[in-house]
Length: 543
Ligand code: AHR
Image (cartoon, rainbow, N blue to C red):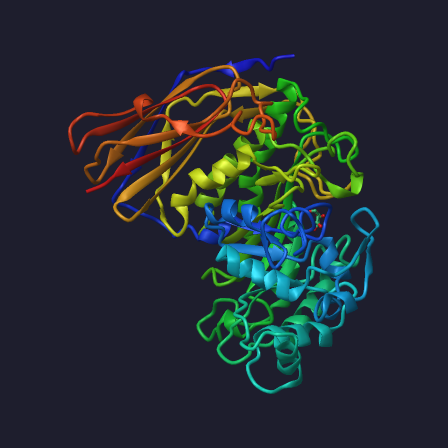
């Protein structure tokens, strides 16, 4: 069934003040996540030194090259649920002597620990990205976490630094982002918020800064809209909540609080296919994606009460679509295709991230290669590499990294569609604090955001309507703008996706001829034509 439209103005009007830049959009909201799960690490990032696939130290060079083009700012590792089972000392030293373990969360497969700390840090160096390491709080010890920090970042002749040297790395690494466990309300220990708050303070305290390496400790946070979890963790931080004699959050056990929020199209038990879906399911999915805005606002509201000066960061360290696995693949490996729908889910998330970047300091897509909403899929048999539609959104939006947010105000009527049945629970797990009630709801089908950097403004524009084109007319004020250039990501259908046989079914193309600047400097209007189900970026030189 095709969803009826409630209101269909075919032109959307808005205004943007180029001379009034707001908060900075941290590049870390374009962060990534790689877990020992399915073929993310093994077969995805890492093929081993003996592989015929070109590699450096076992790391796939084609994957590195593709991700370098995204300027990925950070990579979270080793999980996920896996992080709370992982004992880092099993993953160092000669590979043939490393003990094996069972990856009980993901397929119950045997993990041989051939990809460990040194391999991960080498991967980060090849990618030119910052490591984000999640310590084991669920089944690990405080001493283990403390030793890991020392192993990574200590320079002297202390025992952990000596062990690192014995394993071939003389200089300490720089590590900033340090996670304190993962989903402690679920796979990370089934704890109450209060119990985890105490543990986070202890682990945070013993995860110490070494020399000039300063950790940014991230406490593991809520599922979706569980604002109470965030409140408990804010309270657990204790004093220094923004008052005059605030000692600064740098002195606290953790500097940020995370949460996870996935886009689930169906129920948790039947999430739906990544490529075989109808328009109702499409609209339901993108509506859920759009609701990330209210979840971000909800967590930020709670944090503002305890930290009005916004010193504590909010981190969305897992987000993205979660569909049924591809038929015939291991259910524990979470391998799904990635369609144009996924790209539009991503672009809508980024618009919300840009608006909330005054509190949101990082967001990590789950997961970078071969798992959930991946950037890259690698073919198991041929090894071929496929860039997904989601990859292209990350690439087209690169100009927003560390740029100043430019609020875009829409005026007048905006196009909407009534989504007859919002199918998902929005939950994460069977009871995961979803806010996505069943029943009809309205979807605004145009999503926009903008930023300014280096003498140009970058606009991201999404038309979520699967059937109708729209024209966006934005009055640009404050500064004279030069000739716009544009790129477009779309395809014949929202189900379109890339495969080894068809690598560019969904790929960006030039869209400059569908964009114009009307009027004289001082009274200019940027006009952008957006086809149905499309994502565009427009670059505007500013004087
Ligand atoms: O990304 C897959 C899993 O989703 C992660 O391991 C876990 O943190 C979440 O439940």
